[in-house]
Length: 319
Figure 1: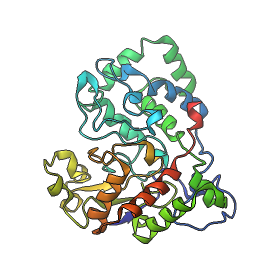
Figure 2: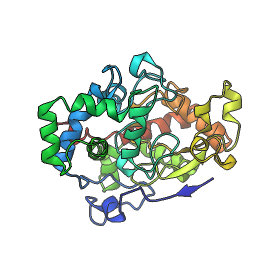
Figure 3: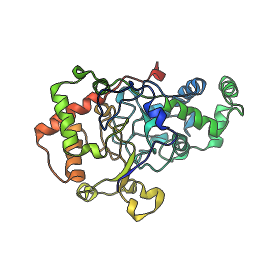
Figure 4: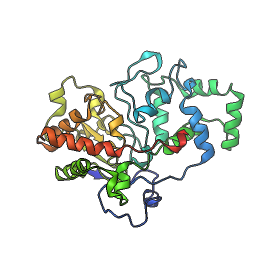
């Protein structure tokens, strides 16, 4: 399965906006633009809501609880906990650069960040709430209600809560990684080992699924193309079915959105199940189950060094 599509709601012009004109290097990976078009008022409101625990049934967790900005927008636990201490069914994916994803969630089962918010509010292992409860609590906050009225014509509504959080998420881009500087022509931005790691990344075929602005996030792929990853791992769970849980198509079993590798050095553990504790382990799994081959420890080391160049600057929206 090898499907590529443009990010939902992101035009080709957006993907090229902010890139250096006539970028010196023509590579399968493209630099992150310096900015994306967002509504500043909605971003500011969404920033408040991102850390709002009243979105959860017992006021115990917020979006921020599972998406830590000092962890690359992800979470260091295999599966973080939600309302009432319930354990999530998957690892928390990064929220950074989600705007460049053609679909959302690990499985790629929904089209928009707004749809993610809708699911998270109701998910029994995340917020375990409903819009009636959420709006009932938020409507008692006069300052917040006024903020919604000044930002949206129809004020505080479920759709507007989801949209504000989504708009904030769209602003969470991480430009100016060292590799982006290299792509723009600064040959000194990455080391010789990192350049060799990138060459190996392309030579072995990793680039087939991990390319574009987000170094991934623009296609579906079966987890276990060249080997049965889930049989080898054991204890198959419903979450391991991936996209099938949304489409119910047999062809979509164990199919997932190819994750972005942006800031990947900060987002351990890896994969939807959090099964790989280190990048070296994750690279080894990819070689064995996606490429059907093994790489030497030295080659894996060089590829990991290259992946470290994909760490960008913290989003301006956090400042």
